[in-house]
Each structure stands twice: as C-alpha cells, then as structure tokens.
Length: 383
Image (cartoon, rainbow, N blue to C red; front, side, top):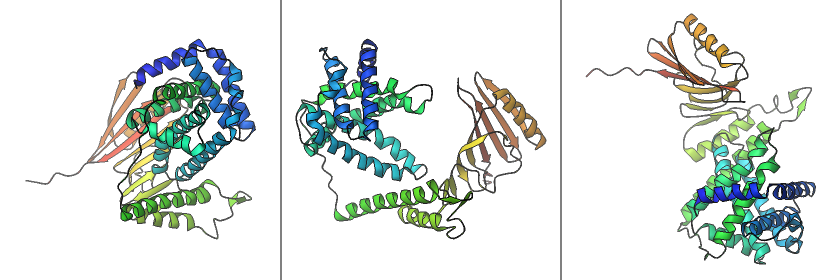
C-alpha cells in the first residue's frame, strides 16, 4: 500500500463527490448519535460501501447508507465490542502521559479495524467474530504500513472534532474513504494469525500490568476526574484526603519498581527524582519570572525545578511577553540575550552556574506558547 498515493486518491474523491459525501456523513453521524450508537454499524458500514462504490466509479447516492440493515446484528455486535475496548482505553487514558500516549496509539488502529470488520460483515455476510478475525488477519499482512495509514486517516478524519470552527462532518469523510480504499486493497489477501510464544510467567506479567493500568486509571477517573461537591467543596476532601494518590502511587510503584508519588487530582506524579504533570513543583526557583497571565500546560523535570521544562499558553501578544521577560530577568540578576527567528523568539539567560531559555511563539489563529527551560550546570571534576 502506498500511503501518499491513497491520500491523494482520498482528497480527489472527496473533492469530486463533496456534496454527496457531506450529506451521507451528516445523516450517518446524526442518526448514529440519536440512536445512541445502536445504528452506527449498518449506517457507518453503508457509508463505507458508498465510498467503496465511488472508488470503483460505480453509480451511488446517499440512500446507500440505508440499504444494509440486514446486517444489523453482526455490525451491532462489532460496534459493542469496539465500544468495550474503547471504554478500557478511556479508563487508562486517565493516567497522565502513559494513558494519553496509549490512547493516541491505540484509538486510530481500533477505529480502522472496526471499520474494516463492519465492511467485511456487510460485504461478505460474515458473522461478527469472523468479521473481526478477518479484519485483524488482513491487517497483520502489513502491520506497520496499515497502522501508519490508520493513524493518518483516522486523525485527519477526527480533526473537525477538535476544531470549533471546523465541524467534524467536513473531515469525517476522509476516514470513511480511507477505510474503503484499504478494504479494496486487502479484501482478497490471505489472513495472517498473530502467534505470541509467551510462557505462563509472561502472560501473568502482561495481565498484571494491564489490570494495574486499568485500576490506576479508574482510581484517577473516580477521584480526580469526578468529585461530588457540596457548597463548592469536595465531599471526599476532608474524610479521605489521601486515598486516590496513595492507591495510585502503590499501583504504579509495583509496576515500575520505583517509588511513585501521585497528587490528589492526578495532575502530576513523581517517579524517583523526576516530576511529570501540569503544575509547577512547590520548590520552583523564585528568581525565575513567570508570566502572570499564562496557564501552565505541562511540566517535566526535577522536583526543585532546576533542571526542567515547563510549557505555558496565553492569549497575550508575543511582544508583551518578550518585554516582560527581558525586564524581569534583568531585575532578578540574569544576563540575557534575545534572538528572533520569524514568529519564534528565544531569550537565553545566564546566572552563575545556571542557564534558562524562554521560547515564545504564536502560530496563526492560536494562543501564544511559552516554553521555559532551566538547567543547572554540573561542575566538571578536576583531572
């Protein structure tokens, strides 16, 4: 499979049949949502088959999405199975960094495999489990290429869900056309089976890690993501102040073999001497200026902040932020130099055996991003 060729083909078909695909996608998403996902299987599969006919230059119209309710039961079972897997991924995604990464990696592949399975169930009249096995089997014929392809088309197709001014119905057809093109290429392939030569010990470790991730994610979802309140205060705050972080910390400690400390809201955790999260540590240096109208997005580094990188965002203009840092760094005794590279500005500061770097950039139509890096110089040993 040539990914770039397929992408060109996707956009060509989308441009050529824009109105038809827009109407069909709108009806599919609307009716799937109104039915709470019950009709997502036959409607979504019908939309993929519509795209498949367009790929084959056959005559088709939006009514195609309503012509496949004979496969309602197998497609419903496939969607329910995918929904169960996605639920587990959602629980695990409550874990900072690790969960987000797993969510980013697994979700596109899950959507792609589900789309192929639904198409196999409707086109080849396969039972639900056979369709899923067939979908997995053809994906294993070229796992790296198909995974990368799924990553591209699914995230492109989901782009509208993350952009307020760009509705998802405008981007979702990309994913459906992409699945149709993939089906056209792999439908005739012989399936491959995944064989893992794992012993009982490896299986037990794998299941333990998975159970630990699910339990940890569930704890964070329950204690951090949702906390009942009374008069603006958490109901659990006074009675069980450390339950969430103590349980989560013990789970991660047993998995990593390192001492892990987790904050109450799950926004950061500390593994050994490294803190990861979305808030600054309490010991962050006071002589490092922080722009007051910026919100922190992420933090990675030492618990005292000396060797760390923090990312902030703000609606303020870059010129205002640059002037602030140049003024405040001087007040705090830093010597500094400012360099401009188009929309990117870097302020490099030094103070005794420490250095800092403030990167300020503002892409078009987006908030200004500030990346603040601190480094403590390590004294060289005398030879």
